[in-house]
Length: 287
Image (cartoon, rainbow, N blue to C red; front, side):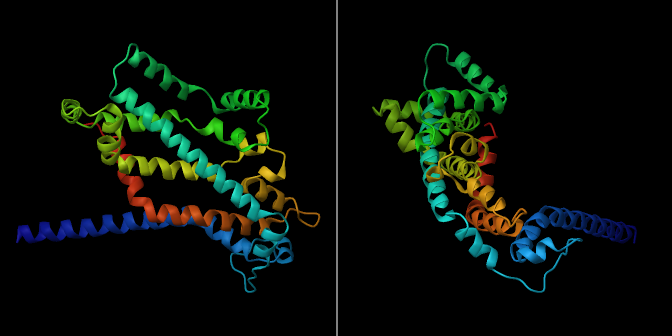
């Protein structure tokens, strides 16, 4: 009888905890997802209806796709999409190549001062981004690379954080595999491509996805280094749409553009979310 009472009490306590947990999670989900709902809702409101609302309305009875047409006709958003794809793919490929080779050198190769160099390298993470942007702007301007794709791409091809993440992941690979490969006469380059990269594929995929998202959402640097519409990215396009209102900011058209621009990233994350979680957990676990 006592055991039954204890079991009933434990089941009741577990149900209460579950109710509280799911209530809090549901509340948090609403808070997180509400901006996305508001973005989509605003994108299907007409320009006049949106600006006539003195009190924001959380539903609309007359949705329209006019803003999506405006987003692509008021500015050359299609060209900005193409520029963003070129910028994102080029930057990501170069960053992965640089990060993989640098991480392999720090994790496996031996050279004088390696630990000191890596420590100084990590210290770069302490420098504020604003100072880096100023330095990059001066350098790119001096090289006469403003309003060019190399000027957009070059400052983003290295990442201390991604090199550190890969280095920690590479360091987890047993030393016995490396020594066995060297006994078989395998070069360091072949060992990297045949052993290290296949084992570390989840982490590399994670870095690729995170870099794609980072490049796709770039705003400050593209706005700073380009003033030629031929090299504008989607971030520039959003700002142009926002300023094309009839005497006021065209928020509905801007929200429509944001919906279109965000869709590829949302799909990418949903497809590879398990890889991202796996890669981050492997990169942050030692042993």
